[in-house]
Length: 478
Image (cartoon, rainbow, N blue to C red; front, side):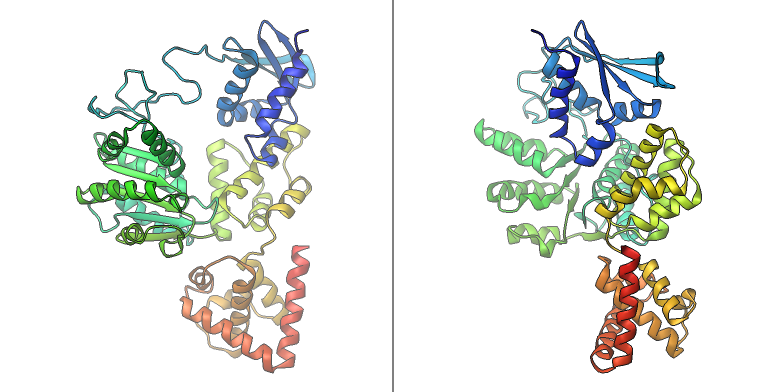
């Protein structure tokens, strides 16, 4: 007995579930209903045009592979967009899952770019046996400087990245190493550099590669006894961008051969861009000679975006997607999602999805209702702005005065207490904290934290004030 549409879609969901995060699966695949399976065409019902477009933009590749796995090369997927919950009034959109070609390996498709490479140097981005000498730069065209929002959290890294893109290999920023936590824009900035170079210098060979991809290609080269060809290929690149180099840790042979690639490119005046989850000195399991080269150029960090930058990121996302939301909703999301850019945009997307599913206008009430669990799970960190507000309310001080140059005792103490809690309760660097207080430097923050700690240990009244403020902060996070 052949499986029906429900069974096929259930099988597809099992595969999809293993390939995306739980929140995305719940938001974008749980609401889908399978309708029918006829002539190898599976029809699924989605709740809105917005839903359909999102699936097509972000998950079409995963859907294509999954449908092909369960329905074969002739398998197709058809969407039914329901209007007013009436199937007869629905609009239908189809995508064809293309038949596999003998020239295309569906698990690892070959890609192209206008780049001439000598046929004597095998290209690791091309499937063996296929006569192609071109590769794709592996860049996402959506990652540009135009949509990389600048703020105090990333100003240095962005400026250095643009300088590198304008004069690749000709600045002191070689290599340029961008580091920071998850979802703060490392990949976006690295690829923006590549896209800008391609725009300004069409003849330059630009290549973006993840560290995992580089490692796997190297392993294949060892198996096939083609390591020299592998190294020769990478030495042809004009701008090499390697993402997440921390995954090179402990892989001595990979590091050794990357060292030779690095040296050749650097000595040839080629540009190297690297990303990592931490600064070079904190990278563990790396050869010292490689670490020393990472330090030759500039290491620039990406910090958690401040409140105003989060507002700007949300508005930019809305502008690109043609979305309008009330100001209080934008402020609510920006105030509560403080971890990283990825979670911030994820919260916005989840809200829009829920609005589409429930056929409701987005307002503050819906935002609070729909994002309650999302916010609780994602972010338990209070923002520096919220700390300033709570401290100033408790001490009866105007918040704006924390940024002023005044040395009035009550203002100085409110500023120091705010800095103390910012250091204790957020992941912001000392430099970032200082910027929130009128551009003060990290030494001022260190002094403030030490002063507060000293007063806590000797002044009972002061300690009681700190405890009361901490309770208010805890209540704000409840």
